[in-house]
Image 1 (cartoon, rainbow, N blue to C red):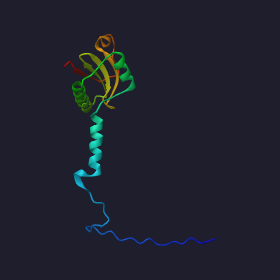
Image 2 (image 1 turned 135 degrees about the vertical axis):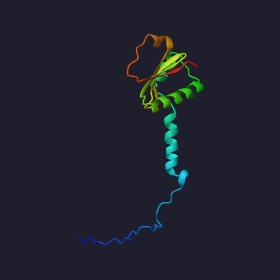
Image 3 (image 1 turned 90 degrees about the vertical axis):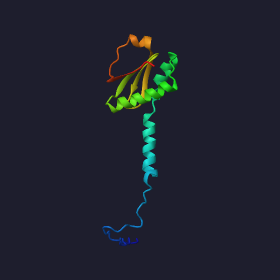
Image 4 (image 1 turned 60 degrees about the vertical axis):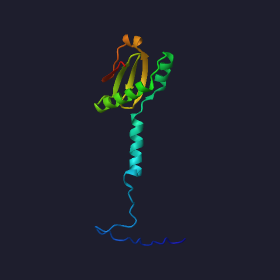
Length: 130
């Protein structure tokens, strides 16, 4: 059986103020960290619709325009900054339950149906009657 051979590892001493030539170069604002931050922040502002919400919107013929969706995304982000986790969003033709924490529309109903409902487990309301 062969005996294992141990070889010492030689390292250079670290001296303060002397830059190592093998240091990773930082590319500033265009670096990976900046790209990652941009991707995370842009993704987190977009609202997604759960399968349940999509089904309810189709069943109840609820449609939301791009302008309404953009405004709703802005209002949900504003509510999120104020500590709102789950919100009731009232549109002219619909009522939506939105998780601000997850940026997800959980369910949707028309305003007539919403008038007979009691909403629980929400801590914010966003009125958008435009």
